[in-house]
Image (cartoon, rainbow, N blue to C red; front, side):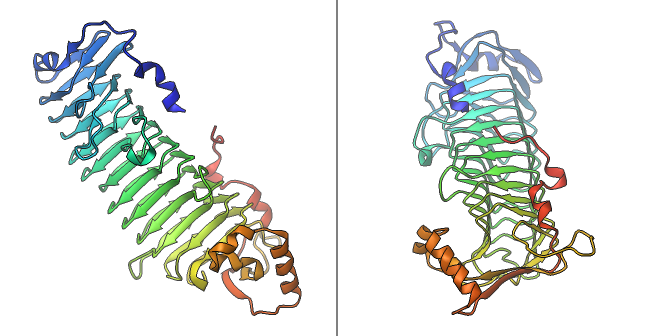
Length: 417
């Protein structure tokens, strides 16, 4: 884990000189637009930067906040923080004590390690920041008491790329629009990405592994979620992707695997005549691939792969998924034929509610999901139904089940370590 990698730099500054150097004094003597190159040493904060400048570190440079609030606060536009080791912020959640706070436009935080800080990077009404190729871990606290690695509030036009995040509360926490989260890794946290009232963001090429929830959208519309690898396998309730009252989102080419639930749709979409679109995703080895909280229309599933799931579709409360649009998905459970050889089944793929789906409507029955007794009861009911089964979903043009053993064309990535 990333936290283990950072142990050496969190111990007392063995490699740094015994005499601390006050970083604020050096910042105050750097001219506007200048570059402050730090030699190896122990620099103490907190410190503020109120003019455009570049603060650059190297191996052996440690910027220590001494447990007093936020370590570095960037108040000016066009400030760059490069190759720094930033550690030991305060631990107060009410003041959002962080390694770095960005308040100015076009700030850059690159190639740095932020460790033993409650929050990593706190971005507040700061336009077009770049936060790239950093390593971030929170303080050693229970998960609910940690801060977020990157917190983005009312800030647009940002690029957050290539960051390695572990052991925080949430990897990314957004109340913002128009940002790009590209190629990041988040491990062993609560939410990999949390979007709250956040529209028009792009989440692409990330690896969200062993978090409680991979990506969750709450009242968030018009987002693109593409080419991510998500395994929410940390506990029995892990969810790869959750949409709550969110509309017009596009989810494509993702690998959603080994989670208790691949996708959970709660009152989504919330707007009439809007639609959430799922295309070319792989749902593999999940407890449930797609769970609907209700029968709301407005979700479309096309060209996805469903493979090795315990259940492909579940609807809570006795409803069905017939109001969703299903087309050209590959189902490993499809048992039909393709006599004309066009790669499409001759008959629709249908999922019916038989006796073995009792656990959908009776939560306590989940204990017996997959048990031999329930499986035998289901087999007998299929032979001679004693209750009328319920049609849950229907894909009129299923692709052959053989295709369900492969990833979508654009999802050929190396498996997560």
